[in-house]
Each structure stands twice: as C-alpha cells, then as structure tokens.
Image 1: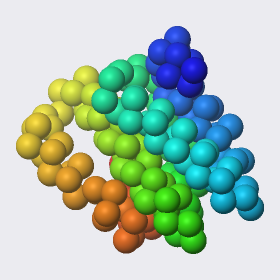
Image 2: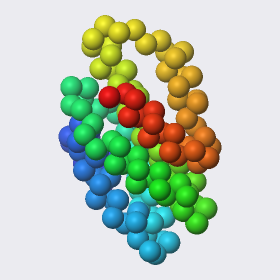
Image 3: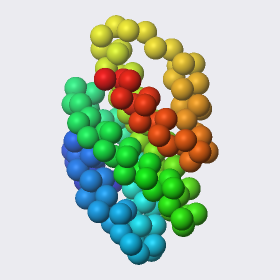
Length: 143
C-alpha cells in the first residue's frame, strides 16, 4: 500500500510525509512496534531506491529529520531494529544522493557513475551502523 502511495505521487515530499507518519511508531517504547515501523520504512525506501525515480525538480525538505529518526534507531537495543535502521539510512542516503546527482546533471555538472558507486559503497549499512552521525554531516554538506 505504501508503494502505491509513492507511485501515485513520486515526489520527495510524499516520501517524507509517509516516513514522518511512520516516525512516531519508530519512537515507540514497544520493541515490536519499532521493529515493524523500521521494517516498513526500509521496504518503502528500498522500493524507491531501486524501482522508481522521484521528481528531480522537487526538493527534499525534511531529509535531515528523516536521517535523524532512522539514525537514532541505529542505536536501538533490539538488534533487528538497529540493523534494519542502518539499512534504511543507507537506502535514504542512496535516494538523496541520486536526487542530488540528477539536479547536478540538470545544471551540467558532471558526476561519473564510478564516483556514484564509490560514494554509496562508502555508506553501506555496516558503516552507517558504526557511525550514524557522519551521515548527517554528509547530507548537510550537500546543501
């Protein structure tokens, strides 16, 4: 159902809206609710990262907040939640990076496919899990 919502309106603000709604469950005191919310988030983020292209003309407005919510979950005491949150941050960074590259391409700024692969490889879920605060530094440097 969440995938259908994003397919109807493939813009960053729609993705942000859906993830923001899941954010309150990600902050639940109940382990099973946090795990389910993070799991739903990564399924949606993986879908967006691999299957669709968000409208390049529309900006991300709450990207930092989304990274923060998932980044906090990287330190969750429940291993399933923390590892899935790291995967979610990786997908979110991948989506945001691809969006940024598309904007640069429109401005005729060259970004090679190799640079793209190197950047994403440097932010694997394992790296995110070990240093989620670095993700915020990278994303804020894009603006």
